[in-house]
Length: 105
Ligand SMILES: [Zn+2]
Image (cartoon, rainbow, N blue to C red):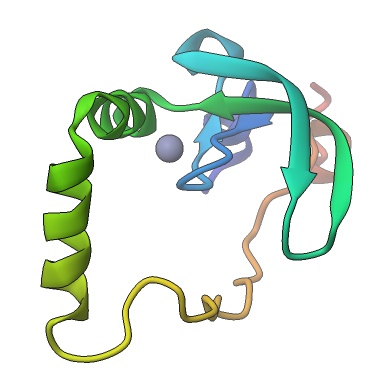
């Protein structure tokens, strides 16, 4: 990705992980959290892209019955969403800051 295309990508969607420009932030949640896995409370600011905003609002508005059906669908072939997630190794990209790119910007 060229330096010009990465300029302004200063934020990140906390759900899908895509880089965002400030003006692309669709939703922000600020407040307190409790991590029930690590037993740690704290303050948090979460930003979302428009797609994750839509998905979150849809999930918030759906019924508990719909949530149970969704879990049954996911778990029909075995253990479901409570398995730990495995993330792939991060890829090394060609992102360079404007100074190190030698563009004089
Ligand atoms: Zn997202």
